[in-house]
Length: 350
Image 1 (cartoon, rainbow, N blue to C red):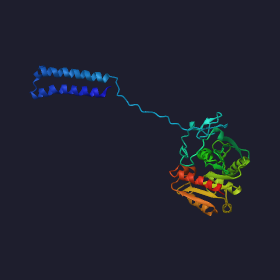
Image 2 (image 1 turned 45 degrees about the vertical axis):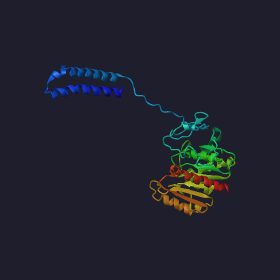
Image 3 (image 1 turned 90 degrees about the vertical axis):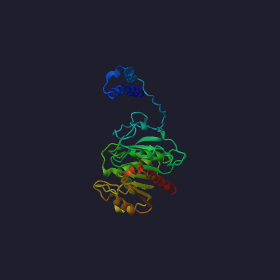
Image 4 (image 1 turned 180 degrees about the vertical axis):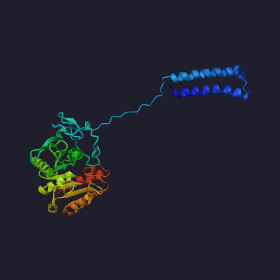
């Protein structure tokens, strides 16, 4: 319907209708006006405007809508060769139903990317692309025979760094929470291993806090079997506790702990004496209002652990209540990433 023509006809019809009525009222209800030439003219105008309204109402003409120019947004994609079948539909690792799966085609509504899609502001200008050949699906076999699901990121770039990194995930999650940061490290030349603890993500078995140390030892053993002797362990929450336990029992090059307590409730991983002898470089990170149910002193206990550990060490306390890898998604996430990269760079100079 043509709206403008419809309203023009409607207004004209109302004028043609009310003009005779006004004259009749003004002449003491003398109806002879209707038969006069002006009255007959008003009748013709009324009929014509009525026809106009009907025609405009039946018209199929639509007002033109300006076209919006479209642009193609190109998102760089990379694929991951794999052979496993996912155990959880909410995880975001490749489906492993073919030799290659595009990661970006597997959205996960429960997870937010840890870092921006571009890393230009976080790393040197010359970054290199993650390719299927640079990421390998692997089995990280534990001492009790469980094949933990893992992904090994081969370093990319002109020179491989002499330090390999393990990224350990938090409880009720998977290694894929570290995926973006793992890619960033690989693009900067670091070999990186991410894996799912038993009973988490795609790994078989049942989660048991008592075996967190066993799973961490398997990850360390995997890297050493690939001739990586200098290893840094970075972990979030449960993964941070696991890295702490691993650092006590193995000669690691460095330790990063994001929100990981010294001991998990019900499971003793590290003693006060163990902590006092932990002389490797350490970086502790936590949010000032981080909370764990039924653990009101969680933050103060974490800070006390960091303060009691020997030098060299650094403790970073951030605003808010983000826990574990959620620290990388906060407004200060880029600063957290820079701290992690600087920690690794500092180890390279030793």
